[in-house]
Length: 172
Image 1 (tube, helix red, strand yellow):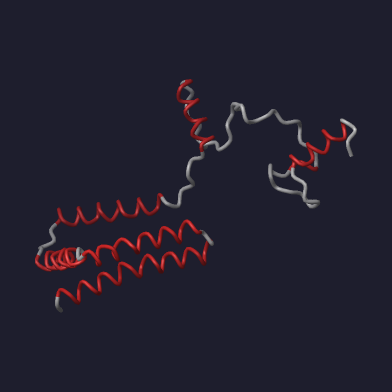
Image 2 (image 1 turned 180 degrees about the vertical axis):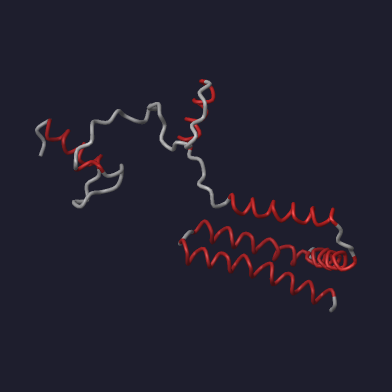
């Protein structure tokens, strides 16, 4: 196979794969962010191809295949392959973890600066009220739903709180 043919094949694959990923993410999540990432990832090899640098990538790929064919795999090299594979699995697996919110990070900084030991469960709710939170009243049957989750009538805890405040002031 000529180097030009390899360059075209590598370029097409590196352009089509991110676009296919973007379409899959759009179908799965309807996320514009994922689509833009896929388009951006597809434009990089397209730009390299237009610049003529994709032939360098194809040459590197050919040299890598030749290296794999000619190299005797001993224990040390298999350990290296295993380490690289483990790194890739950990990196991909970390993408499935829930990111830390600003409020959680702030709470962790407060706990660390106060010298408090870290909780084993990794609490998602802060134990110390922040300036944005207000002390809550004991929950009645209607307000047992989480904040922001409407009940059957479509009212959230915040809506009921505002309605009670308006009633107290004589506004119906």
